[in-house]
Length: 255
Image (tube, rainbow, N blue to C red):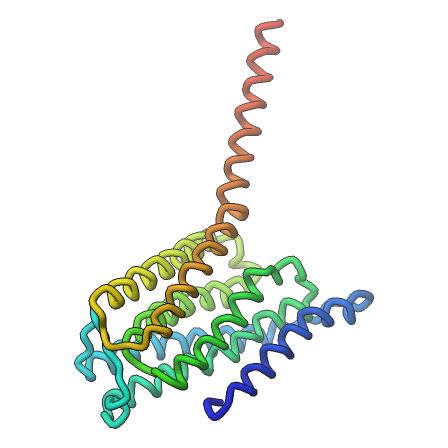
């Protein structure tokens, strides 16, 4: 997939067309029952994400990475230990193709409200950006977002896996904390790459700016999602309770 960007571009266009045309085609049809393939998908990504998180840490440790200022240059491509890092980062890139299936399940199950701008932007942005990183600078500072992201996704797909069992859904109170962890990830990644830029670590500037753009744009979008999904609803509920209590007090006074 690294010989040319055409395959990634094809996947991106096919993905966008499916998101656009899928709901139109399914408008008068029953939603698909995809519990079994979704369970298999989630198990695979839990295992895969856990492996990548551990292997990124072990390979960078073996490669004697400076975890604060992680340089990368063309000469390191001849280093077997650096190649080990590049191989697991390549798997991380490949995993972004499989994660496109998240949207496929949503569309086929007619969960159209879940296919938000954030969801689509996130998937298309990441797979395309990771192609450029893997093609030209597969190592150095990008180990950090890949490792952190793999850790988050191991937790996230564990949640999806448990949520596929109806009896367990009432006990899955920690969904919003996954979103908080995702936002923490974007802040940590931004601060890490900003520190690398400040220290003038040996990594292409375009790559560092790309990480800055990804982390900040996703932080804004995830923050907006979190506010609308959790904080605003909580605020509205508290307001309703207050106004209800107020009316009750006033009625008692009148009595």
